[in-house]
Image (cartoon, rainbow over all chains, first blue to last red; front, side, top):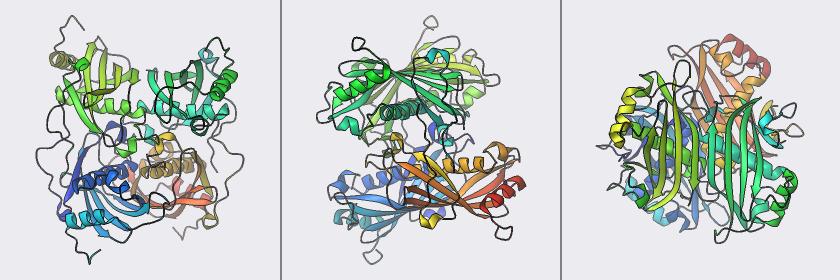
Length: 158
Length: 158
Length: 158
Length: 158
């Protein structure tokens, strides 16, 4: 039987010291382009996978814990920097970290690493909106508290 | 301005004479693998695109015309034969043809061609199911009539 | 840190007793369609991932062990039966089994299961071709032997 | 027969007046997520498709015209703003415009519009690198001249 697991937790490269969370992904054939490197939109998909795992890790599984509060999170801005390419079969650690949580929005910093090398970095800004009228809404209290606790953010820094 | 249009209708290769419908697609970078050829699952996606265009062409746009009848179509079997590979930027004609329409199911034959060469052939079997309880249901009358008229199928052959 | 691992090996549903190999995959948001179910081409991609893991498991990592022999494997026929849909975040076990290995071709049987329920079954036929002239070629001896040993196939059944 | 063509050229929304180029795309089922909206990484793929069509439109078809000069273009930074979602079957116009061309890099501005509404905007920065050693290299002269001519950029503004 085959598993995607790894023998030990990846250590974050130095600049990622405050990234408590990471999720390991192995690059699939479908994700690699004719240049032999991961096609650039797929990193946004990798971050989406990691964000889902982050919600699970902090006890707010997506989408259940969100929809139960009548809210969903929508990406409104993404900034990606591509430093070096990943290749087929590479094992990548997708690090992420909520750096700011406001009234209705949230900023996530992300990094895709292969061993000690950072390949891609990202800043993703999400806004929470009501599932009924799609208008922006407060971050649900249960989600806010779980993020603050996990990240060790004080209420002031939000 | 750029368009995906072509100056003249593609002529079907000889064995596809009874394929009245085709839809042109240009191969995207995202769809090509490190071997330099279209990654095999993408042909199923191409057929899905062509089926959507087929529904539009016969006057039953998907999903509106289906959901209005309380039914949706689900793929239950797909058989694909890969004869030759498509490559980046190729213009492909996706031919399709409903060869059989039963009480609750429908068989679609498909072919992906590049000029006169047939690259992939497919047989796709769909079953109609109720959108409320997901149980199999009759092909809605309006859809059945539109297919029979377009394909010139007699009621007996169904 | 998050891992895709599972606490214990999945047990194959009864009809899959002779599937020695499986690979676990968690359904990603990107793979789910507006009907809330995995879009049908993605199962072919799941099988591709599992085939890659199979080659690793039997000691012939793809593509290295293939290209070193001057051969690559190309899918020439795929037959899929869709019995029940997978949904977002489902943990799926992709079982696979080489059921026949001929002079230049190989038949793989596959099954996607969620716990004890089989959702999709597949038969995939690959042919080996030379990487230089793309003409069909014998299955390299090292790959043939590794498959026969892993599957417990006798030389006669090939 | 079905074509992706449109009866008349899309007119750019007011803020896009200097976008001379656009490419029309119809949203595919595969690109829509369970929320019923285009999954966010797919816009980067749409821009990639439009960039390919841009190269064709200005007479430098990708990748031929690039590889012939021993250079390829790699995305090094992408910034996307998501203003409103696209949905299944929407016809989208992907506008793009080279706003700056430096010694070895190039900045592309992009916008995805549905009729007069701008849904997504993007800034994409590409760097040219040698296909032999992957080191950054000058934008090939033929490509530089074609871009400057098409965009009406003076040599000074580059």
